[in-house]
Image 1: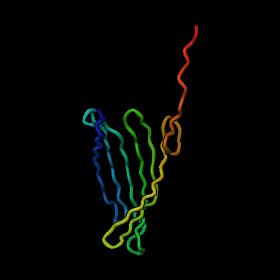
Image 2: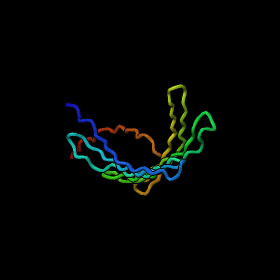
Image 3: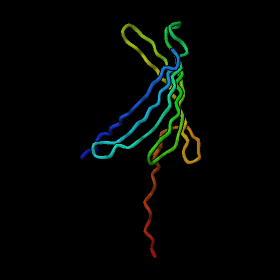
Image 4: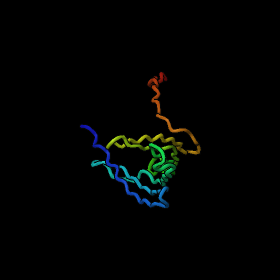
Length: 126
C-alpha cells in the first residue's frame, strides 16, 4: 500500500511596505491523511523590486529568514534575484534562490544528501 501524499497547508500575512517592498510572514504545516498535521516552518520573506517598467524585464531581490520546527529544528536564510518578463500573453519567471542552513552549531551550504552504503555488521565469534 502506498504512503498517503503529504498535506502542506500554509498561512501567510503579506504587507506592502512601499510600492517596491513587500514583506510576508508565513507559517507552514506538514501532515497527511494518516499522520497528524504538525508545524513545519516559520519564515519572514521580503521581496524588493529593483526595476519596474524601464527594462524589458522586472528584477527583484528575494530575502527570507526561516525557522524550522519539529524534529529537525534549525534555521536558515535564502537570498537571490527574481526575474520576470512577458512575451505576448505569457509571463516568464526565473528565480535563482540560494540558501544556507544553521543546525547543531554548524553553518553549511544546503546541498542534497548523498546516501552512504555501509556493510552489515559481522557477527562476533565469542
